Length: 236
Image 1 (spheres, one colour):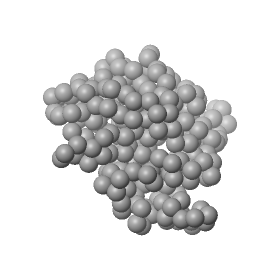
Image 2 (tube, helix red, strand yellow; image 1 turned 120 degrees about the vertical axis):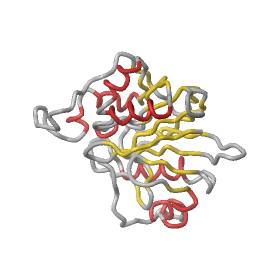
Image 3 (tube, one colour; image 1 turned 90 degrees about the vertical axis):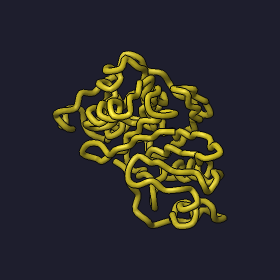
Image 4 (cartoon, one colour; image 1 turned 180 degrees about the horizontal axis):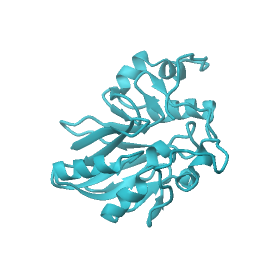
């Protein structure tokens, strides 16, 4: 499997291009702020053919380049219906009043072809099998994408802003809910094999085993009673 990832834009959001190998079809995950050029460069470098954009959630730092990226390759974008409105109304998603400046260079809106994700769906795209898990808490429509392991490839979790190396996503923006986030962490992440590689929306890669051992939120949801964790949360 080929995974080409890079941090994009003002928020350093990780955008990933995923393909079975160089020279094949690929899926683009979370083309955020100023990601279009990075996507174009990775497509050219690895001789890839994009067939879809899939989105872990609707915050502007993850979807700001959806329109140009989808338009450049004439491909659909997949998003959970609870977050779909954010593509056209990012200010509402961030708790801003209509008309307050966000970032002047952003062009918001939906691409021509939008398809909706559902919990437990299995997407067969670009020769890849992606399992969708609804994981609310950071936003109402947050999802993760998982790929199965193989003999020489560990399972991979594209966790969006649910789980980071050493932390979890913030839950204080509109649609966020700290109890839902912990429930998603317990339901989606905790059962995964320790070897699962976690590629998150921000920051470095990690593994489920590393987070199970050291992440205070993973330790919290694994413990009886789900006590409180005081470590900072991340994400926009």
